[in-house]
Image (cartoon, rainbow, N blue to C red; front, side, top):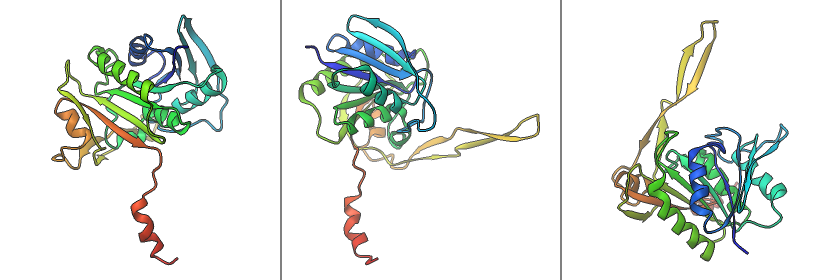
Length: 252
């Protein structure tokens, strides 16, 4: 039996990135897609607790089944596992995202929400992102890396509680691959205020990103800025073990 890969994203089932991903990996596995019906960027690991969810079959052919859901990226994974498949997927993939998910974006990304959810279900999970927000982004240069990494994860798995955050720079070819840590960075000037002609104020969330350690050569930001594919192993266990002894010493 061929492996089964569950795919979702935060750009919606019609996005170019997820459809390019389907074509890249369908040669090595059967593909089940459950993705949001529209853009859900910034949803992180959010799920729907107060609204009903609906599933719509969008496409079905040999080896590929595509569904949309009106919920979040995490909702899509949960619904797919509970309602759309009779067997456990061998791998979960989030992406390919239109935009950078390196550094602190890891915490906000719906693409990473997909991947973390898969990892929390003990399924080997990977997120792929390209540093290009354009709807017509060129994902062609990513193909050999996506296919090879997918094959390796299917063959070898990943450590329990570890998923992969893979980011590609906006280039037509890459210098190579760097396994690296998440850069420390900050978003600032994140709100922009406007006044509506009807008399009320409103805000857009915008912001600018700053790399707070630009000279550190072991980070995902450095790798991307220097032409490398950045692979960041990411844990679902966020316990700060180094602080346990400190807090025990507080004698609360």
